[in-house]
Amino acid sequence: MKKLNKPADPRVCSVGRSMEILGDRWIIFIIREAFFGVTYYDVFLSNLGIATNVLTDRLKWLVENDIFEIQKDKKDARRKKYLLTEKGRDLLPVILAFIKWGDRWLADESGPPLILTHTPCGHTLTPVMCCEHCRETVELNEVTAEEVWRKNQT
Image (cartoon, rainbow, N blue to C red):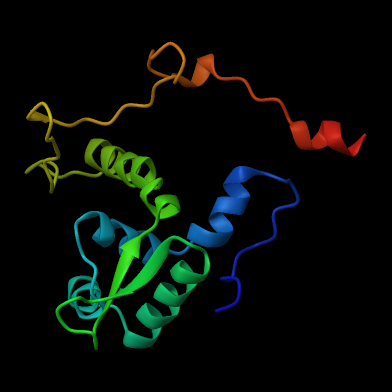
């Protein structure tokens, strides 16, 4: 699959670069399913209700971009498993951020559709963004950005 249909971003930006790979709803849904333990094509297909050609295309894209790797099933060599690579596993905070935002702003009166548990401590997980250095939570008014790409053009 060639690049997904995305508008060109005139700025050199990590968000834009990420969206070139991840900016398709099916891509995010497939990655979400992988975090929930799905590895087989037929299970992705069943869970997502996605067209076979779209799923095949997106899985191929995710493998080409090193988000997934393919392994043969040890029990049935005719079956392939789609496993998250290290690069793919690094998307966990992205998926957790989507869940947190959706739970806060889109849940209905019955509440969030999932309850996440942090297994080591056994408590309900509410993901937070924190500074790697001081471990304080990050607030919008506490973040500044320096456009390195503009510096490099001068």
